[in-house]
Every structure is written in structure tokens, then in C-alpha cells.
Image (tube, rainbow, N blue to C red; front, side, top):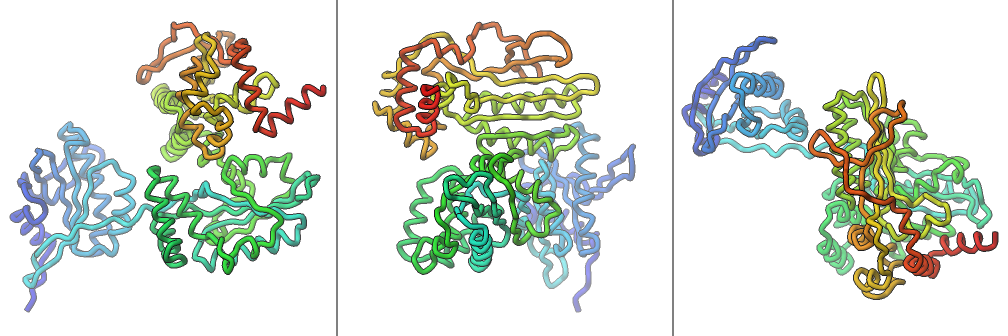
Length: 531
């Protein structure tokens, strides 16, 4: 007859057989009392030390009823041990062991993904004598995805609203048949239809996991098609690029029998991303927008207006723009602001670090909120040739506005110049293999962004930072350099980037080259010359 063991008996057995949990563990105490001046005291089931001398807090649970409390108790015990022992977070670990995991797996997994603690969970497998026979370590559930559009989107162009609506309906049905679960189709009526296109259908999907997309791809494709695609992925190193390719391939309908082009019955089509959404969804371009929601987007408590703002990527997801406000009392809002800054300034380590320094400074000083506005296309040559036209839209910049109870403080990014005129031919030979026209292809494929830092160095340009302590006074802005949570005035003199326009030979070559392949730029030049 099997005799049921109590939780205490299971604890005592494991305390005597710590190698079953982890080789080298040394018992410190069972039922270690932890006093608490601010609430209920605690008793750690097993307190041990590992081979590196770290404290190991082990919580034992037997039933689903008691397992529900495990995460809460671990958090409390960790805080009490830290307060009692004055130890660093790197000097202790947390382990939860339970016979039953039905009630524990979800909260444990959520805690695992958000905590900074060294945390493990294990299932206690009982033997015939109802005592522990072995420990099976638990794999946490995947981190639950937040609402986040994939950067890879698509647009179909129409000359008729009825056709556009029919296309959106047909597209939504096909996406569901393929296996995509959460996405939207936005039917956009354009304010200007002078070019024959009056409506767009804009597709964007929730960014799912790589495993989710691979399951669809492996089901839909085979043979050389699948083999070639996997070989293409092997040449990529950035996880975001790989995920983007998977997201695209999952619904690819390029074959004749599965053609999205025929299904959507559109006049033209084009790829899209948040930066294009900035244009097509702006108030002066989009006259009206109808949103078709599928899956969790249909259930989301979110207005169409807010959903379209997310499509534009202003509060995260765009690699060019950021416009986001965070309450510094809210960790999720601060994390979202930092993530938006990291995305925009991916190729700009100076401003990326500055955003983190400014947030730390704001928190240290007790600011209530921080507003970040940023633009960065990482293409300084395009920036420079457009400046003489009076068009500042390609100038990289950011501002961080800190709000305190009695004043506002602001930091601003700026591009500085060392005052030495660059050599156009040397620049082209070094970075474009002697072919100035290849700049067009570097832009098309996005490689200009990774070259931009080196090109700026060769031009004598660099990213800097300005500061104004109080917007309400007349004190001038000051160039600064951060050192930890503090900063000091930068003493080395710099010129503003636009002074490079005085380098006539360089600017003439750059403008001429731009006009040779950039239709928008050459059109602008032509209109200015006509004026």
C-alpha cells in the first residue's frame, strides 16, 4: 500500500539528498526563519549554498493548492534574505520544486521572463515509496507576445473603392486560410488621386515567433523552394531580419496557383514598413481609413486612431522616427521609450547611449515624465544635399524633454563638424568602390545605414549633445558630455554641420550625383531653378 508523504517529509528527504537537485549543494538550514519588520515573517524550506558559494533559496510544494503561492513566497524570501544578509543579486539563486505544476507553470513562466533573479523550476517525480525519485527541470512557457506589428507590410493600389474593399476581404480570408491569426487590412482613401490611384489596401500582421512562422512555411512549401529559402536565411545574422523574412514567406503567394496578385485584383502593389506608413497615413495624404481587424486585433480595446498610430511606429517599431512620452514612475513605459530609442538609433551608438543616460539622469533627478522625439535615417549625404533647398526633413535630430514639478529641462542631439572640407573623390573611392552612382543601390538595400558612421567620420561630422537646464529662462544651450548620471560642458570647439555647405567643390559634386538618380531631388532642383 502506498503511503502518502507530507510536504515536510518531501522537504526533509530532499534536504538530505541535495545532489538530487544539484551536485555540490551544501545544506545551510531547513525551515530557515526570516524575520520581517514590515510584514509577515517567512520560513525558507531549504537554504543551501552552491559550489560557487552562492545562497540557494529552495521552495518545496506538493499540491496545486500550495503551488499557487510558490512565486509569491520566493519573491518575499529573496527580499528578506537580501535585507538580512546585505548581499548582491548575483550572490543568491531561487529554485522552486513542486510535485504538481498545473497551477504553477503559468505564473512561474511569467515571473521567469520578467525577473532579474537567477531562477529555476523543477518537477518532483515521486517513486513507489512516494518520496522524490528525481527532479525534472521545467522549461518555462514562451514569453507572451505583446501587441507589435511586424515591420514587413504590404500595399495594394486601386482605382476604385469597391475593388479595394473586395481585395481587403479576399486578402483577410486567404491569410486566415494560410494560418495567420492576428492582422489588419486598412482600406485607405487618398486625398489626391491625380495619378490614377485613389485607394490603397494596407496589410500588417502581429509579429509572431519564428517557430510559428516556420510551422506555416514548412506546411506550405517544399523541395527547392524551401531549401533555397532556408539557405537564404543562413546568410543572415540579425534576428530581426530573419524574423522579417519568415513573416513575409509565411503568406507568400508568388506561385501561379497561389497568386496574391490575382486574388487581390489590384492595379499595382508595393512593399511597406512603418516609415512608408508615416507617409500614407498622414492627415494630408489619407482622406479616410477603414480598418478590417482579425484575431486579437478585433478583440483589442483600442480605437482605429490608436491602431493606425501604432502602424506608423511613432511609439516604437520605426527605425526612423520616435515620438513617445513615458511616465518615469512606470517601468513598462520607460522600457518602451528606451526600446524606441534603441530602434531609431540602432546605427548611432552616440545618441543611443545618450537616450539611456538621459533616462537615468531623469530618474535620478526625480523627473515626472520624459518626452522623446527623434528622426534618424542614417544617410548624411542625403541630409547635406537637401539642406540648401531649405528642406530640413532629412536632418537627424532628437529632443528629450524632462518634466519636473516646477520646470522643464531639455536635451537635444546635434550634428557637429570639425571645419575641414572633405574630398569627394576620396570618399567615393573609399566607401563606394569608386562608383558614386552605387549610392542609389546602398540606399535601396539599406546598407547605407551601416556605412553612415564611417562616412560621417570621413566628412569630419560627429553626433553631439546640447542641454538647457530650464526652458523658462534665457540661459543659452550648452554642449555637453555625459559621465554616468552627471554631465559636463564640452570644451572642444565644434562647428554646426550646415557650415560644411561652404565647401563648394564637395557640395557641388554631392548635389550633382544626387540629382543623377534621385527623382524627388532632381524634381525639387528643377522647380527651384524654374522659380
